[in-house]
Length: 308
Image 1: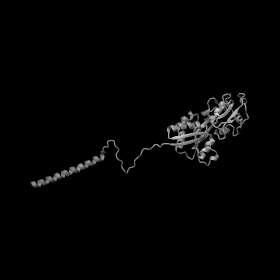
Image 2: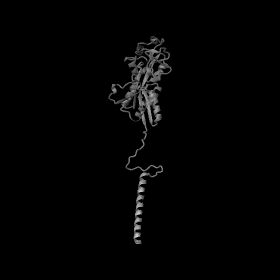
Image 3: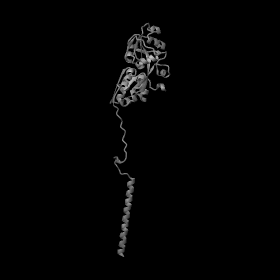
């Protein structure tokens, strides 16, 4: 009997031990699934088969950009270049003048990354792969030395002066003083604009003097008694004055409203689509921030003014 009882007790004890083991194993499995192991702030090791997302790296802009051409557009390009290089120290931008014709030729030949022009590229550039970037509108003005007492010229009067038919200011209500015409060279976009808009395609007189840039034009008119010329308005400052044209002065509203016709559409041409630092620089000039604020501070007008 004792023997039998002992055998029964042993069996019961073994069953209890096995049951406790099974319960312990089940409890351990449940905890592992629900409670993550502490990592003390350290990143958990990545699953070798899982894709990992890397933070995007900001691309460093670097290189040298050459821009030549329109002296009318030069003040804007220089100011934009200074600001852009300040923010991108690995970029060098070299803007020069020489006239719209030179800018177009340089970019077509590949000697400049950007060709600045007051006028559209002509038919001779149709097969050169040039891409046009319109960056601003430049108001132009007929300018005179301060000793010329008139403040307005009609289209007919201006045409007769620049073609050489009128030679004295008294013929248009001014002082008895000979008119000195200051020209830009044939390669100048400013000259082409005045020839088209003011002279209606007629030729300029060969009398007078010629200056290579808008800055030199403004200086010469300011220093020469009886002088007349033409520049974009960022160059209008003492001792020269801008004349009204057909009784209308240059202004943003007058250009937008179609009342003042003397302005140029400013182009930056590239050979093919712009890339690298050249693209980044043009994108900066075309950015809403530059167009909405800086362009008018520099006395130009936004590129999309006439589209609004």
